[in-house]
Image 1 (spheres, rainbow, N blue to C red):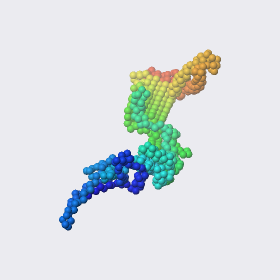
Image 2: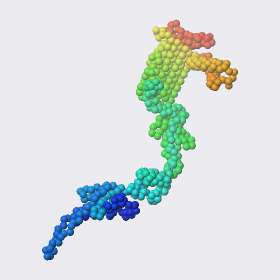
Image 3: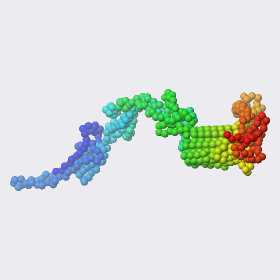
Image 4: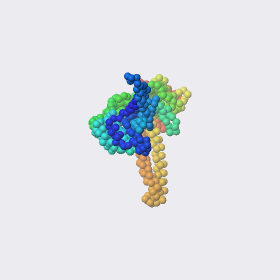
Amino acid sequence: MGLLKLRSRADAVRKEKINKSGPSEPSKKREEHPEELRTLVGKGYARKGDLIAKITHGVASRDGKNLFGEIIPAKKVYEPKLVAGSHVKTEQGTHYYMGCDGLVEVFRDAKGIHYISGRVYRFGSFTISISEDEMEAYLTVIPPMGGAEPVKFEDLLTECKKQGIVFGLNRDAARTAVERAAADKSEEKDVLIARGDVPVDGREGELEFKVQLASGTPFKLLEDGSVDFKEQDRITNVDEGQLVVVVKKAQAGIKDGHTVRGSIVKSKKGKEIEIEAGSNISMEYRGDEIHYCSKIGGQLIFKGKTISVEPLLKIEGDVGPATGNVEFDGNVVVKGNVRDNYRVVAKKSITIDGNVGSCVVKTGENLIVRNGVVGKNKAYLFARGDIRVKFAENANLAAYGSIYIQRAALNCRITAGEKVISKTEKGQIIGGDIRAKKGVEVKILGNESEHKMDVSVGYDFFAVGKLSEIRNTKKKYESEMNKMILILEKLNKIHQTPEELPEKLRKVYIEARKKKTLLGVAIQNLVKKEQETESKLEESWDAEVHVHESLFRGVRIYFGEQFYEPEVTKTKVRIYNDKNYEKIRYEKLILR
């Protein structure tokens, strides 16, 4: 006979809940159409794709015979009939599969025909996930379907307790997620329902540079948008005693935290900044700070964990496009040349192994050019100490100390706070002018062509330039002062007192009066400096000019307003100012 086998994965609990869930849809249909009465013979829960029923066809029967040869008729084979309803798929007419997750119901009518159908049915469910560090717990709520029961808040609390969530539980957030899933029939995914107490770690150590660090850029962007490749930012200069770095110590942990499961999370001490004081760096502890100061002026070097100051900047090649202009707070050594239109400035000494072109070289100490200066009437070399060059032509040399010329100088303007000396090799100075407070010593002064040149000695010639600068500044301030006086006079004519002026004019009046006062103080200071500088110019020094070989015509030697010019070439001559007779004298130079 045929066989009808029904399959489902309903369990006792679900069966009990289904029986309480009220009449099914087919039951309602039976009420509406009583002529098609069907009886519910089974139901259960199945997943989409589950095999829920299978029909095995019967084998045809055959009549039999008794002992007397009489035919015994065979019973008729039963052939089951199963009709697929909603959410049920059939294959080969014998296999029935569930088309959704939900409830499977089987009915039988009065004729013995079975009907199988599925309907969406899902209980509300939830999952709780805890983050790996146990600092957060998340809730996902799946809403019920087909009239099944939703998630109960009490079940949720029980699960939280089971998973050990005892700290930072947000009951309101959990309850809201459960209620919203039930009301909106929508999934509430990854709702934060518990959060641990994050520990408050100590502050990390901090490193703060107190100087503007070089950016390393090989150019400077100008305001007009053009690029100046001479102005490169490759060196971090610092002064002697300058605070360069402050390191703040790390802080201990401030407050411990807790995970959602109640475990204590220890706070951590901040990570210390490790800095070592290298050469020419001093350390000073000030509370929770360490101050690093430069012992000298120079280049700040930060290599690895060590900070140091190098007093020497060495340029292995030329000062040119590869280096840009050089400005350094220590000593500078240039192994090559200084090319045209570039600049080298140092607070300490400068040594140049090659040549110097039409450029600017300034130093706070001594300047040495081991080769020569080809100035093209644009070079300016200045030193607060001495200047030493092999040769110079068409250049401006100025030093507060002495200027030494090893071989020769041609058409140069030379100003020395001490002496100008050229006694080695050829030792010749031709053309231009020389100004030296304490005199000149040279082998040859001038040449056979009677090249015109002036030599002035015995006075502070730097004071002359300073006096000119002071007077120009004073003139500018006096002009500004006159403008302020004129403004105040005009405003006083409008009203007798400033209080009567309109607000805008009153502000102009106050500003003009303030500026007039400041200019008055500045002018007084300049007058004082002018007088001091003038007194320096009135001082005369016992300066002499010594020519060891030849003094040619065309050379004028000044002692103040008086000068001496030889009518014929002189040899080995000493020229000086006889103050007793207020007369310039010359005599044979006695070489020692």
